[in-house]
Length: 106
Image: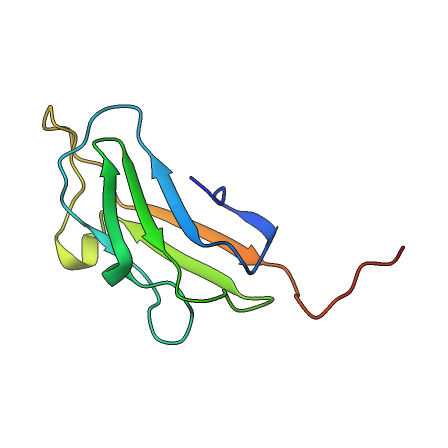
């Protein structure tokens, strides 16, 4: 995952979020995102190839914000699945952006 799950201090200017799977996946989109004014929305998700799911951010991410996404959300009865038929269990993906208002001391 990029940014890594549970990472903090993620730059607000990240343009895309990526999930790279170890096996080829069916190209179903089963992602739950915050949407709204957060800059991250499932409507901007697509498969780059059979192993890479991408979510394009809209503009900048919000500073000092914790983003919570789910892959294969159990709430919507939608599961990501490998081409071999193995389902991905509900997987939480959480990361926090840095405070873009803080200038580095030098």
